[in-house]
Length: 193
Image 1 (cartoon, rainbow, N blue to C red):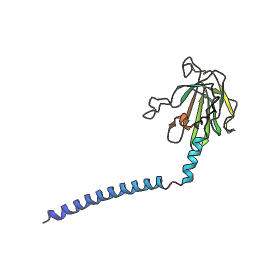
Image 2: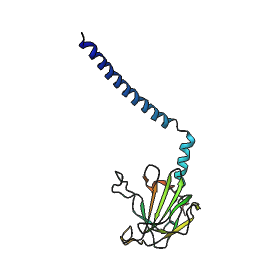
Image 3: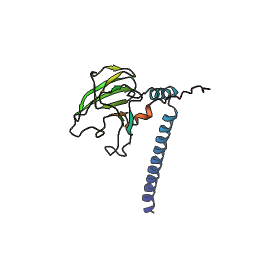
Image 4: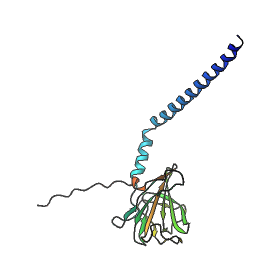
C-alpha cells in the first residue's frame, strides 16, 4: 500500500502540468485572436489610407522596372530588398509620399537618402545625391534628389545600366515598394466616328 500513495501524487502532478500547458496555450490563442478581431476600424482604414497615398519616385515614362522585389527567406539571406528602376543619370527622384529625411550620406561609398514616413515605414533611395538635410519634411512629389553614379568600387547596383534602387521597410521587415503604389485608373476615351 505504501507504493500506491507515492504514484498518486506523480500522476496528479503530470495531469496538472498538462492541464496548465493546454490552458495556457488556449489562453494565448484566444488573446491573439481577440487582438486581431478587436482592432478598431479606424486603425484599419488608416493603414489602407497610407498604402494608397504612394506614387512612383520618378516621372512617368522615364523609367522601367528592371529588377523586381525578391524577399529573403531568412534574415540576411539572399534576395532583393527593393526594386530597381532604370533611369538616365541625373534624373529627378521624387518623394513617393510625405515624410522626413532621416539620413543623407554615403553607405558603402554609395550616395543614399532615407525618408521616414511614419507608422514604421521608411524608404531608401540609392544612388541619389540630395541637398536635403536631416529633419527636413518633404511632401509627395517633391524632388528629393538626383540619380547619380555610384562611387563604389563595385560599380553600379545594376551593372552597366544606371538605375534607382528603391527600398521600403517597416518595423517587421522589407516590403515590395510596388505594392504601395496607388493603382492608376484607366480613362476611357469616346469613340470617334
